Amino acid sequence: MELDLTALFLARLQFAFTISFHIIFPAFTIGLASYLAVLEGLWLKTKAPLYLDLFRYWLKIFAIVFAMGVVSGIVMSYQFGTNWSVFSDKAGGVIGPLMGYEVLTAFFLEAGFLGVMLFGVRKVGPGLHFAATLMVALGTLISAFWILSANSWMHTPTGHLVTPDGRFVPGPSWLAIIFNPSFPYRLTHTVIASYLTTALVVGAVGAWHLLRDTTNAHARKMFSMAMWMAALVAPVQIFVGDLHGLNTLEHQPAKVMAMEGHYQSHPEGAPLILF
Image (cartoon, rainbow, N blue to C red):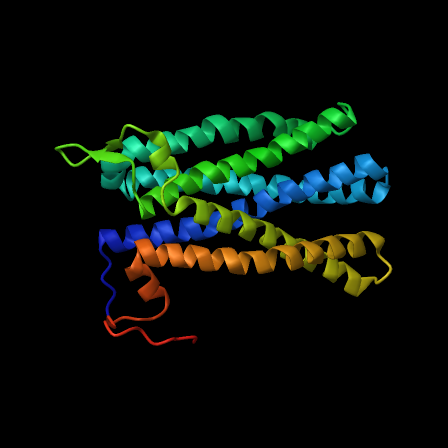
């Protein structure tokens, strides 16, 4: 069997690799930024050194993961103009501003306070440093808001007009573009997934250290916090995921058919396929 190595296939393959690699990092940093804010808040409240130790431990990991997310995201944004140049030309009037808002509101906020968060522990007061950590955590959530709005518009486009030459331009209301039909479900689903991802990673690290030393108080604390978080958000994610699936069924039934393995239409009703 010979692969049809067309330019389209190669473009899809390259972009699929980039997005699959990139999504790991923002999914982790969104949750980890909030976890760092919780750790620092608990340290300020209790003055227990354990929380500050955990904060410093995960702060180093956050810096590396954040940098990898930025670098891989830049590559991905360039591929919009190279691999999908026609799409960017036709839909740039809508997608461009949404991604620009992410840079102006979220990335600048994160970049502005990240330096204080990383290097200002001993240079600014505890209150100001905690405020910087909160701003970084808020920036990650705002970033998710705009990127998922753009992504959702590509799935369920609304609020736009089409020019005679086939270009998509904003309609009379930007709110219809931003809050398109699938956006609330995709945003909630993705943010919860980020928190769940972080909980499982933190829990795995804590478990690894506990296997080596069951008396390790730091490992026990991070493992406990992670498992409580996972226990709380996992049931919520099941419910939100079902709502997202029903929304997809309403707007993109062909996608649901493909996900469930129905490659032929069933006018009488599709059978349930679990595996």
